[in-house]
Length: 497
Image 1 (cartoon, rainbow, N blue to C red):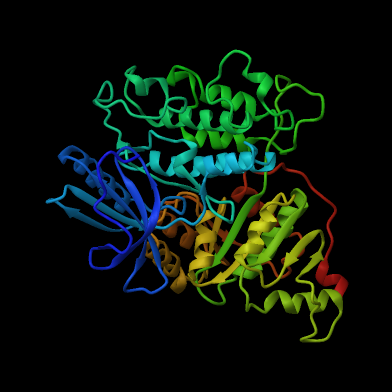
Image 2: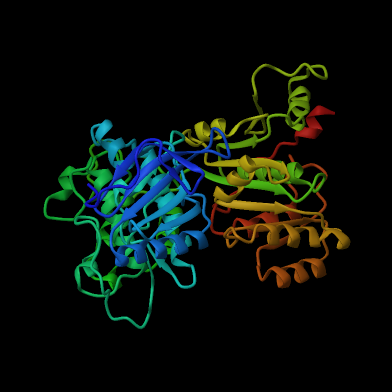
């Protein structure tokens, strides 16, 4: 519980704008309330109140400055900051995250989280840790634990409460303040050295062990193997053990390294019945999302999404192509061709198949979340053009975001303009595709964006059919992600003639 009395109660107004509705939670240094926005009816925010002396006020002010500088889909967005010197209160107004903490979820489900969700969960946490650790200066979270992770109704994870996060200072030998939660904090957080990115990775290992033992363990002690759920992928065990090494130099050295380890393997399947978790490791891939966003109408996003989907289907298996736009017409027309129906007489089913690719027309974000829980190896999202909030969020969350822009010399700058307009978002994973662009246009754009993932796409009249030049480009784009195998090819357009 918060040690200091709160200055707020039901009906209190903060900043002449935010009316307190109810208490969401409290801790030793702060209390969090839900508030309604008086200027935006129906909008709800979380208001974090800290009441204490100047030192705590300094910590909250530092937290506010840090959050303002960050932008990531799995971090809360701070929208306002108030100080009340007379009472010693400091207020942060941030996104209200609908859902429950991971700890509450675990208690509500008797310590059980489905095995197929554990690795995707780890990758979500690693994605935000990678973002924080690659800031300049790096941001070290230092308190990764079940109560600081919110689980939304869509089964997405949001990292909350930056109360003890800090920027890494290379010249320090150790932290001046020892903070963190026993059982989840790295050994160096108790005075053995300075915390850095590897400290957060230790906490991730503790969190994963906590999930894999149904909430019983967060430290690797003698006999813990007997409590690890038998159906879990064996590949997780050596990863967790390495994350939980006592000495930072023995752990993974970056979030990117852990992501690579989890992504490296070819398949993600539960351990076979009767096989010990100490046996050979199991490969992992999971469902990966490719999001294709056009810079403008007519830039070729749908054509590219189709070509990518059929390329992936030939190389792997189980590919879904999703039209993430409730009013788009392209897939409806394609379904009419596939099913031989008249114009405007598409089937009531929004799913149809072409050469092994499952097409989903006019879908919503909820549909995408449902598909992520299935068995698809890849989900390709055709986002069309424009930056509508829902589609932009899915683009930013994707494992492989692809921006498609015109390759014409006078239109190449459209891509650079899009990159600048979204510069507040991390762009290191982005891939830029320019249909029919010259090598000189690609070279100039790579230099301007300071980004090497810029590709010229060759002329490819039939995106359903294999094309050697297109395959060469996509082989480069997806290098290291999929095996270099070949499948029997089918010509969709040829069959329709």
